[in-house]
Length: 638
Image 1 (tube, rainbow, N blue to C red):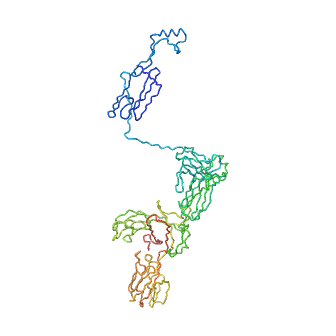
Image 2 (cartoon, rainbow, N blue to C red):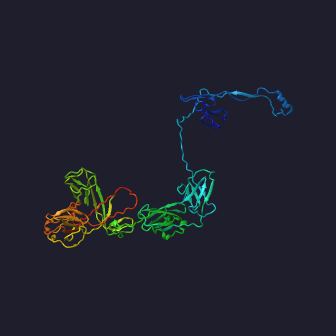
Image 3 (tube, one colour):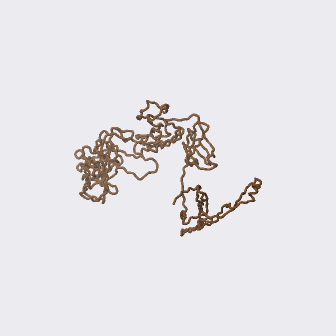
């Protein structure tokens, strides 16, 4: 059996729709075989087009008529000849009046049927539709539309002067960007960019309307003869000082190509950004900017090296193998915002000191070359339950501070001992302690600063001697010199008004006097405070009241017993007066003045709060007096 492949010289098209259809195509193959192709669809209810059958959706049964006997063709019968017609043609040589010569035969029509091969099978192709409508979306980003705004001039456009109507929308330029719908209260929608040098608007977002792209009306545009451009700027801000750090000063400018350049400012005032470098002085508001880039000299062409800015002597002057190439900008487009600090007069009575001694901007230099720097790390472990005799190893030796804190953050003043050299805490008495505590410790060293650099880094004169991990902090140290508690010369008066405090007697002395030579008033660094004390006798001439210039009246004592008022902050006495030093002759109203000087260094802590809403919760601060020269680290208060 030979198989022959027949190529059909016609196209077969399938159509579909919501109603029943029938499409039929007929053609002949190269061997004169007539081929008929029919495509039929139903009406959605199972009825095929042209009444060719039905389709049951539920059972998927198809009943279709594929053959019909209604076709006809032209017939010709040549088994006889018309003698009359033949004779007429021969007689006059011209045939019939119609010009046709019928020499014989019979013409007509005949019915024919389509041929169906016995035993052949039919193929029905169908597609199952979705049970619910399916929607699809496709995003299309059209290419940019370039509009030449200045086709008859080469002069550059003045930024901010362009306004045109296009397809029913109004567009304006601002800082090199084209906006539509821009008003005094609405920033508008970004629709493109403006190249003021070339006089062209590149539209990237637009609304189709009006009569189409040709619907264009230029409403406003200015050009200027001669481009005003520069590659460097020097100016002062309208106010100073500026708030240091990011956000204190923000600058933008448009280059000659229409690109917006934005400056980035760090905490030191250095300005960086695309095609720019410079600096701003926060204290004075002075700004210095250069626009351009360091380019590799080897990458420049001969044309580049013929430009005015190129000089072989400048190659490598700042960066190896590179030269500075300016990038021109339009200075009229310069915009900047700033945050200026305003310092109001300070009430010296409210502040507690003369503000004329403070810097104008309120900032005090913290780090100076030659001063002390304190690098430190803090260690805090998890909460635990202590027990008497239990040693707790902090895990770090050579500590400078250890505190045991309760759940509320309050320090436990006693009940434990600390070995700062080994970092071990031993609990001795837990009476009144909470169930759980945490241990807070600090390791630090003192080093002298050799240099303080503009970038905020500090160079030390000697190595640290310890490893400081990430998260360590540095602090400045306020030098106090050699400190020790002491008692200044004591004196007495017959009477005292209770409000006048002096360092010398203000009136007649008492008949009696305290023997400070043989029984000196005792004092220690832990409990002593810098204070003027007055011990004023009551009517019994035996009992006296302790009154402090700043503390007021504290407690009472008697000259018949040693007197040691306790400082509640340290648990040590402010001072101790021995009973043997009083002697006799004291009368009611007699007052003994005892001025003391504590080992702590007097200093003033001032917090400057800027006006505005608080950004967070409350703050806390811890003041520590440190001093351990020539004393063992385990007893820093000795």
